[in-house]
Length: 193
Figure 1 (tube, rainbow, N blue to C red):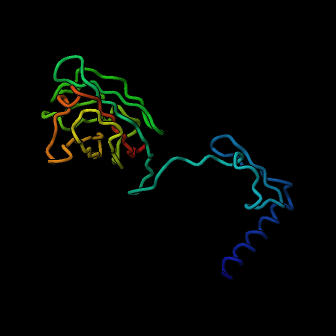
Figure 2: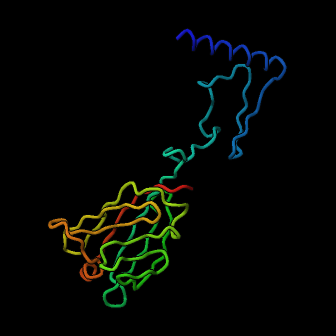
Figure 3: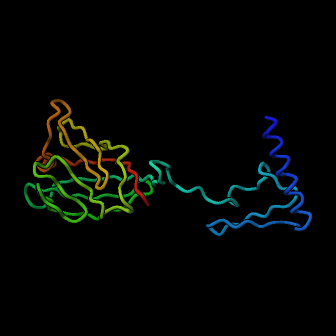
């Protein structure tokens, strides 16, 4: 504790010398907000939080900062038989994914792709801001299909959502499931920017 107090005293002494020559110092954050420090200024008396720089929404990991994002993905019956209609929107810090209709098994409509058996939906990297680093969580927000489902979220370039039967664990074809109702998936993920 003595080392910390000594360090603080040294810092206070240096600051006192600075203020002998200057009445105040104005600090400007990267967001343009400023705060003025005088000889009587201390961290504990720092004024309104609005005068301080904003906290950046980032998470430190694997040697770089990553941005946490959260979206929803809405999956409905496509206009053409044996296809799906997919769209998405931001829940927090995420992207809006325009509706894409008639996505068939093995198909790609731009921001979305579906594997050959219809069990894995990809949200392609081109549809999100930054490069996807990891999927943190994926959960069903709504399942009106009448089949008990689980969803697994994973991926390091694209966001992949794998759909399985909750009872048997078998992969399910979502192009046939949405004939009877819609699916809504909530996804939290990290990107590089």
